[in-house]
Amino acid sequence: MEQPPGFSDPINPTHVCHLHKAIYGLKQAPRAWSSSHTILLLVYVDDIIVTSVQVSHFGGGLFLSQHKYAKEILAKASMTDCKPIGTPLEAQKHHLQLEGGPLVNATNYRSIVGALQYLTLTRPDLTHAVNLVCQFMHQPSTTHFQAVKRILRYLQGTVDYGIRLLSHSSLTLYGFSDADWAGCPDTRRSTTGYCIYLGANCISWASKKQVTVSRSSAEAEYRAMASAAAELTWLTYLLRDLGLSSHSSPVLFCDNTSALHMTVNPVFHARTKHIELDYHFVREKVAAGALTTRYVPSQSQIADLFTKAVSKDVFHRFRSKLGVLPPPPSSLRGTDKAIF
Image 1 (cartoon, rainbow, N blue to C red):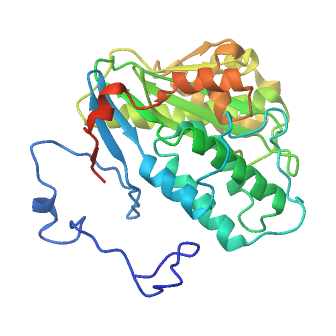
Image 2: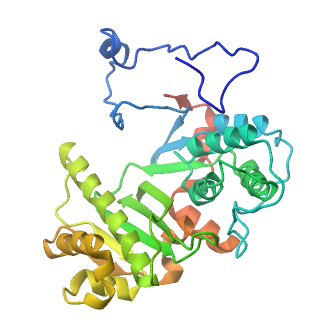
């Protein structure tokens, strides 16, 4: 076992993590984690990194946060005394380019940005901003590092925020998808963003650059719908395996009428022949009744938070709809319990 690049300790270069409990591969692992409650841990292949998460119980459910981890990130970046700011990205000026001035220390940049990636586990409001600065890991400049500092300044003002999970909620599965057409100034590729809800709780979210250039906004939006539909399909199967199923099909909301028309129109050929795989995937789900698509006005499109910078008022409104809030009053009385 070796310390990962960007996270090495120059004082103790040979030190590694010591597990207080066996995770897997050892005979004592099942006994080490046995309790009166069931914990379901989803692992992609055999890679697993669990970052400190504090779980607080309150009258309506659970509050998950990483405020201790967030403070460690601010301390690592020497930003514990920085002035807070209202949003992680400046509205209308968030498009970063490869050429961004003199280069900065790449190791320090990667260390801070890499740490911020794990913070998005309980902070979906940081997802798009972190995804943006992650695109310049190979050659970060002063402009890119200024964007990282803005994220840290936003984090300073919301360091105790986390995601709220309500216990009394329905099992209705639905999502919002959006795309920022040709938003990358270097490649003109679009950004896909989506968030998935189980009842009132946001349980999955993503912001990522699309792999190819879209020739129209409808194409970019449709690719975003395909990504969200794939996530909804996977979550449907997962919930079914857990014994939790809904009588209604998942609903996917989109604010692009052309993309919505393509999900139900089998002869919309002129706009779909170059996105054939995504078209058939979503179209089959809709035709089989496994997915329902609906229109949502742009002013209510929560997925905007995962594709573009928005004004402070809009950002705060959508942030609360994601369930990202300060700790509830009951969690301030010492009920925090770190489970990871």
